[in-house]
Each structure stands twice: as structure tokens, then as C-alpha cells.
Length: 564
Image 1 (tube, helix red, strand yellow):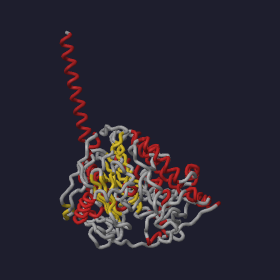
Image 2 (image 1 turned 45 degrees about the vertical axis):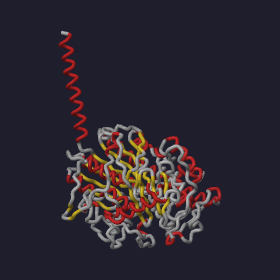
Image 3 (image 1 turned 90 degrees about the vertical axis):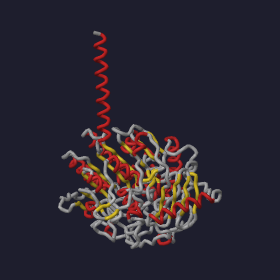
Image 4 (image 1 turned 120 degrees about the horizontal axis):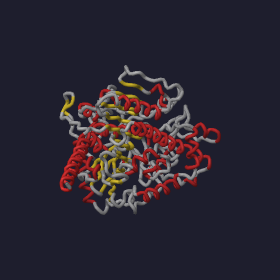
């Protein structure tokens, strides 16, 4: 009897093990729901889980239960990152090497060209329902029909502007056009509305048996800096200490958290870059950002309010992401949903330490006394300037537009408890957002075509990030950059980088010096020449111009910020 019971127990355990293996296999094979969240102009160190002082408990929780990749690169600008993210190609290959103007050059058309297919279109072919809520920024002048619903999304709610008032519902659209558009009345705030629609789309997807892909593209915290007054007020005491103290505090926290490696130094207070058509008349043109304590009290009060508004926008975005997480959790879906979060580029330094305002753009207006309470409210327009951008990109150099680490480094979070077994881990492997696109297609079982709508399309440039889910290694290969004449190549531990105003290569050992403080170009000229050759070979086959492509600039249309 004892032997029979033992044998029976062995059989039961055997079948239980098989059942678990089959269940795990089915989970691995099943197409996941995918939520891709993109922030706009968020600095590398803004989130709490990346060392910042801004209150971001929901994103921090995703990081604590997920994975942070601390060397995930973007393309240094809003629309070019969006082009790469949605196609798995370098931006010039997709046609968006600069901004939205059509320069008549293959890599600089300002819209997604016939050489590419959008990821949602491929996923839809694989059985997904596809939704987008938020900022599109790919409807270039050369193709007004480059719309989300013409590039693979079933439903869309959002804005086509590069930046726009957070208080104006009338410049937000719903597609397809026959879909009902809500009346928000006087309670409209863009971040809330974008999330409202994300939740509507998720609920809509629950009505069927298909998986869904949701692209949730916030326009926060991009200027204009807008937030409720009470939310701004809470951050004023935090930032009265100034950008020098904030940088030092962030750097110390980043080291303790392991976001950056021990030994990585804090870069010196930043530089105001030369952009002649924007900031030539600034007192700080081509000079170092001033020390906070050297500024007069009224200027410090103005700048404190600007950064407090920015921080409030980040907190509000996090709160709205929390709404999405809570909805998934209440429906038993959080564990099996792949959530990805990143920023489209580094913090925005436009155009000098004091920021700019609406009258006249891009000049600064000093707010004083009772005027301070108006900042961030309806009918206003502000940016926060180079000093705070430098703090938001702690510990790195430079900003959005540029290919130094401050311009191209994204805070990046992967959360997928059902498949990701690296709870709270940090992965330091270099990668690019085109690799994220490749991973989404792989996990969604999307078959990337050779032709689309009769056109031959380029093969994916990205390599899937899927190996990192289980702690695997990514294959080493060079990663390339170009924007507005700024250039870079990352190859293993080495990086060469070029600014459009200095026009020479710098060389850094990123494994030891990610703050890019010790230029080794003079010590390793052969390496520089070899990497320069790689860059030119890539440029030649990727529709990249070796000379900076001029982009038209003009004043800011009033529709972007004034109330109707």
C-alpha cells in the first residue's frame, strides 16, 4: 500500500509539473497587451526612481517591480524619436531626420515616407487592436495625410501641434472623424484628457478577444509650462534652493541608487550653446550658466516658479499613469500587460538660463510680485531655460538637440511581471529605442514585411530588447546619431560626439566617464578615424546629410497658447 501511494504521488507530481510547464509555455506564446508610454522633454534624472525629487510614486513602483535600462538612447528630438519609435528605423530612414518641414531631401521630408511601415500597422495584421492617445508630431507639411489612423491606429485622440496649451480642448482631435468628441467644458487639462481617452480605449479593447497596443504619448512636461496653481505652490519651497543644489542632491541620490556607477562625476555647471537665430542676443550666449547665488532675488523667484510648474506637470503625468495602473489592476490585467515608459529626448534648454515667454517669442519676461501667481495659468506661456534643463539632465552634459548624453539618454522602465523576472534590477547595456520597436514586434508576433502597400520598405534597424527580460546579453554593434548637424557613434564602451558649433569629434570612454568630461580624441586618433568612417558609412546609406540641413524658424502662432 505504501509503495502504491508513493507511485501515485509521483504520477500526480509529474502531471502537475507538466501542467505548470504547459501553462508557462502558453503564457510565453500568448500575445501580450502592450502599453507604450512616452513623456515629452522629460529630463534623465527627474523621476524619483532615477534620482529626482519630483513626486512620482507610480512610475517609481513600476521601476521597483520592473527593470530600468539606464543606457537606452533616443534621437535627441521630439518628432525624430517618434518616427524611430513607430518604425524601428533611424529617423532619417523613416523620413524625419529633422523637424516637420519638407526639405525635399529623402531623409528630411518631415513625415513617415513610403520607405517604412508603422509598428501598429504590423501589429494590426498580427491581430492587435491599436490605439493612440496624445501627441502625434508626424504630420509634416509634405504629407498632411500622415495621420495616426493612416499609419495603423484604429482610434486616436490627441493633438498634432509640436507644443500647445494644456488648457485648450479645441485643438485636440478625434479620429476617425465619425467618432464622437467630448465636451470638456472649462475643466480641460491635456494630461488628464489624454489619459481619459487611454482608459476609454483600454475599456473598449476589453469588449473582444484580441490583444491591444496602446501608444500613450503625453505632451508633458514640454513647454508651455502649465499646471494648476495649487500644484505649483507645493513645489516652490523645493526649488528655492536653486539649480546648483538640486544638481548636487540628485547626483548623490543617483549614486546611492545605482542609477549611475560609482566614480561618475557631476559635470560642471552647463554651457549655453550657440544657436544664433534664437539666442545670439542673450547675455549668456556661448557662456556658462550663472551660479544660482549670483542671481538677484526677483530673478530667482521667477525661475523657482518656472521649475515648480515643470515639476507639477511631471507629478500630474505620474498621477495619470497611476490611473492606468489602477484600472489594469482592478481588472486583473496588470501582471500580464507589458508597460514601457521612456522620454523622447533629454531636458529642453531653449534658449538661455532664464527661459522664454510669449511676448515676444523667444524672449524672456521677468515675472515679479503678484505676477508670479499668474505663471502656469491660462493664457500664459513659459519655458524654464538652460539652468533648470542642466539640473534635469544631472549628471550629464548638454540637452535636447545635442548628441551628448544629456540630449540622448532616456529614463527607461520595463514592467511585465508575467514574463520579466528581474524585479527592481538595473541593466546598463547600451541600446536604442529602435531596439524597443523590434522587441514589441517580436513579442506581438508581428511579421515585419519586405513590402508595404506596394512599396519596398527598409529592413528594421533595431535589434530586439527581448533578451534583457531574462537577463540576457544584447549583441554589441555601433549605434548612430545625427540631428541638426550634431553627430555621435556609440561602439561598446567608446563614444565619439560632435556638436554643430564646434565641428570636431570628441572621444569618451563611457564605461568610466559617462559625464563626458575627459576628451580622449587626441590620445586615440586612430579610434576616432575608425569611428568617423563608421559614421560616414552609416550616413551614406541612411539618407543622412553630412552638412547641417537648414530648418525654417518663425515666431510662435498664438493658437498654441492663447485662450479662444
